[in-house]
Length: 372
Length: 157
Image 1: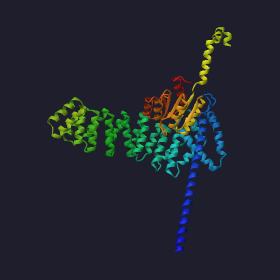
Image 2: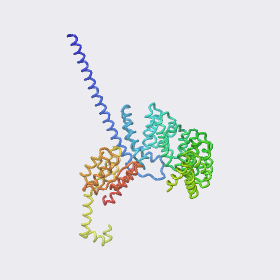
Image 3: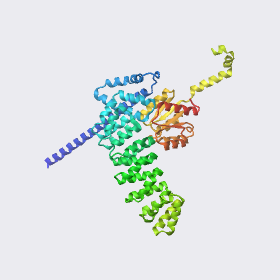
């Protein structure tokens, strides 16, 4: 009995001791963490102040015909105290300082433009962050690689272009997306050729991001998008078709015609037909009319919808049979296309509404009401 | 020198009325409010704005959230308030609304700092009574020029 009591007591004491030890450990861990955060915060403040000065201090004017190196020399002089400070630190400490310094530079790069950004880029090069970041593009963790790609883009480091291009084939999508954005910001619209060429199975997110860049450059992107129509990846081809339709450049009609006629995939052909309708160019009419009789229902429907957007009176004879004999969707699309041809088309709709079958009447009346 | 060569100018300067004008102008410049209150949660930008505007000759008071901005605005009645739209505690819009609702701070011009591509933010801010806005990324020189312009429009320094 007594032995049992002793055992229970011993276990209780041991457990209490372990719990107390763990609690103390946790408190110490928390305190160390808090100290580390404070230290990082202090360093961030320190370098924010230093760099605010580096970026804004007035430099003596230099003649306009002076060499670029003269400007760089001025910037370099501003960096001397910071470099000395970094050199005086032990390696572990220096690594932390450099990490905070890089963070400050990247944050400034995100929020500033104008002259300040030139100094910032110089500092990024001079403090050897560019090579470091390029090296990080090969890091084993994808999030480190993605951040390195983003930072290289933010700091307009053209030297990193080759490494970023290689990152377009990274196994992780976030890295590829960041590299893509960085390349666009570094090389502008011309980068679109490389980006499209190296993109595989474009995700919705990637398409969305890339479409922002495409719309930003507008008609300048048309040659690259037309080139993209011949790429092997179907998702890229679909993206190029969509963008050509959004930009609305008529020179895209011929390549789209070719694609609608010859591309092996029905999805791509249907998309090209849809894009032709959105472009609204009269040159597409004959091809769209020929697709009204295509054996594939998806292509027929897209062609009818496209003609509805264009409004082609010449297509009227081909549209009437579709209104009379097509599927319900085709009948509605054909009725809309007929209405879009003008007064002759509206007369035709009224005629069918009066003399057609029950479904034809319903379709025609619906479209007549739609047109008001 | 000019006065020696042009006795008429000399006579003008010496008139009591002209002397009075000079003294009034000097007194005004001594007491003129050139305090700028800037509210920005991002430390690096706060430092940069502080540094830039101090270099331009303003007295800069920098705070890191909306609540502090409102407190300081009521306490200091600065010549201009720069508000970041996205801030913790109170957003720039909330601070702006509170400033415009207060009789003492209503007339203080407000310059909004907003992210690029947020046109609706800009329109909302201007409708709420902000004097001007600047979008990130911005050039520090542009920032200083906008501050100067707003102050000149309001008859400040």
